[in-house]
Length: 240
Length: 377
Image (cartoon, rainbow over all chains, first blue to last red; front, side):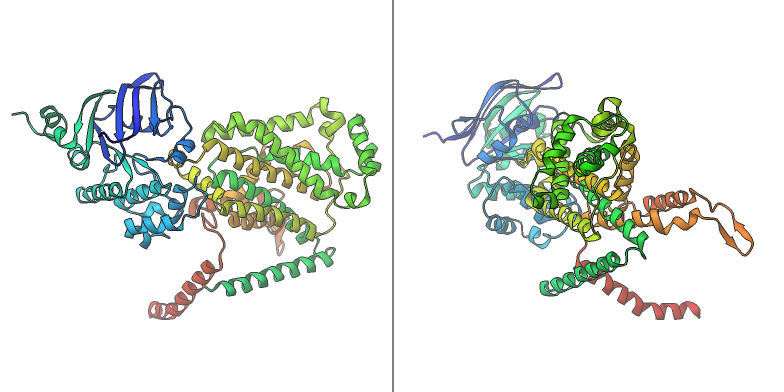
């Protein structure tokens, strides 16, 4: 039996200031999986995420979340439904403390946040140590953890991460990938956009390859890792 | 530090402040200068905190404060000119029948309402300011940084121009301004109104809304991605900030007893901006402190620079009218160069911080004698 799709994108077109960045994309995210979207700079990966999150308006196409159409909805409504974006480049609030950052993540929720804060501290013990520190004083890796933790505070069913490995040391990137796997095991579906195709495909159940606004390839993570053209284009391995 | 200790200290401080105010109020003839200057200072503190709420906490660089103050001041003033003085105030162009009817209606109200009329006047002045802010906020808040500053500055000038225009003569008395406005009865009244206003804003800043405002200031995109409705929160902050600007405008009208449109020119906005910058952009208590400091030094402590100074028979050059402002500008330059984040930065007043600083000073004092000794050798 096929798994339920938490998110379905049909024939999505998005334009940015006159330039068409996304040209007719179809994509499905099955519930409980890690789905990755890889591709070069300017392929339109981030635009897709930003459109799902409601930060950018689509031109044409349909985005469905659990049988409900969310195309054109405001970001706060989409967050309420259970989709949260971890924006590119971390974007923590530098002059707020770690705790305040986490509380902002749960801003849309009116119930008690203390349990979730405990949960985040369990996932990222370093954040507990630094809870009174200003977020701007954290290291890059810690900031990325905070960005992920902040997004988790809204209790998302689907968390979208835009290049979490950007600007981080290789060892820390591995740590982040482990965290993504842990979060996924706790029942959160993940849509991961990455330039580090090798790592992303290794942890992903499904992968999509995005080129200049269209999806050119799709398959399981393993399949794509072994695909010759993916190897040549993104994994830096020469064709035999 | 323990919470009980903090509460005790806070009570002691409040009692001291109240005692000081009471002392001034009783001896106001003797200490007229301090009395006046403090009153103006606390009014400036209200508007400075309101500007800080918009600029420092929400990150909206708005320069419309003088405009909102003017709206609040004129509404409050029209309310509070006693009906028997109306004819004297509008002696040139006459009074609009609307105001006359309003005044007779007000006189017919029961006496307890007339007793609290200053508060009603301030409230309605504030609401008028908030209403204008809500209207212009819709188009203007879509602008960012400098553009927002220019647009709000323009609004403030439009308000001033409308108030002083001859078409408005029967309502605002045009360029002659309004006078004989009912004033504050005591220093306590001014401070009580100011305390209520400032406390409300500080509570707002410390609430979840305040946290959302700060998030917008730090990073709009991230704030939006967290589900914070940017426009709604910006509008909220702008409207509330303008409400309190307008209230402080009304307080200024009550304090000065006579106002005209020139009071609310751009330079007033700059004065407020200066207070906010010196106090620390993003620190409410900093704004209060700096409002009192700046007003007191400008109007009082630096006054002696304006009078000729003789040492023996020698008249010190430069000491003449206006030199005070030169000194003031130099002080400003120093602040901007060496204390870029203002007196308080983004910190708020807290007993913990004071205790920390006291400890540091203690340590320094303990260490210094030895160091001083070695230097002397």
